[in-house]
Amino acid sequence: MRGPLFRSLVAGALAAALGAGPAAAGWRDRYEVHGVEGDDMLKMRAGPGTGYVVIVGLPNGTILRVHSCQQTGGTRWCNVSLERARALKGYVSWAYLRKM
Image (tube, rainbow, N blue to C red; front, side, top):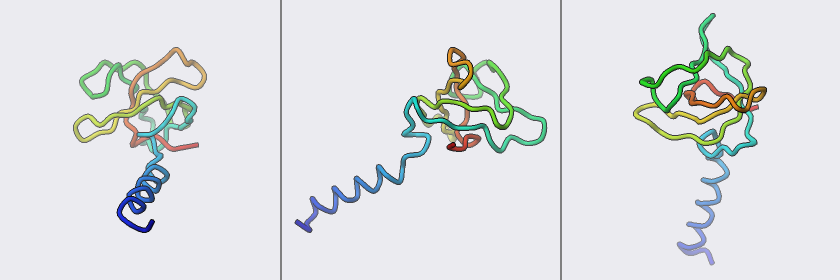
């Protein structure tokens, strides 16, 4: 049982356990905005990229629900909704999210 199949199963299980960051997030995963400089705000956009319109600015400490993430260019963008206003949805850079 220690053959290639066993190693593949173990490698897959480890990858799933270790890779459970924002990219694998589900609707229940809560994150907070973190690392935004000074008085700046994280821009929630209408789509996954800087070419999309800004919906709202989010200060550090804002709680978000992450629904899914995707890589666009050099940035991983996450589809999120606000914890306190779930109808407000958009995309943010996952670089500014911290798991709660």
